[in-house]
Image (cartoon, rainbow, N blue to C red; front, side):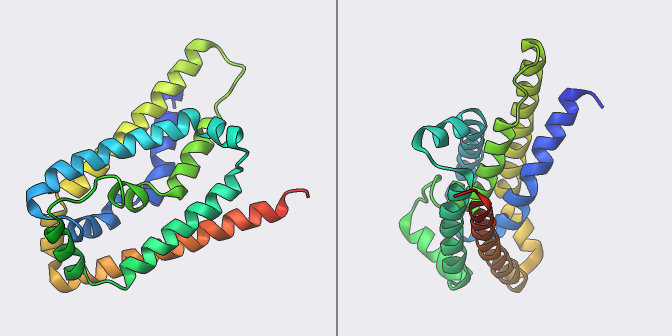
Length: 210
């Protein structure tokens, strides 16, 4: 397989399971109203692409500048994801929708982009992808790999947009009971992901030499 396609698929395959736009679609639907859903889906997809691209390009340098290790990032981010998952698990889908409707507009960055869509887990993966780029290769080859990573991020953003933009017909097929089950299950999975991120960060931190 050629390097471009291989890197593109690697980027997509590494980010898709943890971002999980299909599982997050019912949650997105419950937090938004119909009049703004299309615009919000576009802004969330755009924000997600920018956030992931920034993590790939400068993430490792920013952490190094502030003296923050990836394990510490995972612990801090895992706490955020756990908190959001717990809050979502204990709130009804109808309550979340009513709250969004009363607000009239939902912020497209928090919580829709982060941590619902792009959380610390996916940011850690993006930073890892960026930090593992080969250094001693021809500039043309490095540019090829970089463009493949960007193409992978575009594919992820497009998937997020489609899943969120058409979340209503998806949820309509599930019905109210089915949607509630999916939202609760997704919230529980999000809670577990947060705890797993914390545990992974703690395990890596404990393994470091003191």
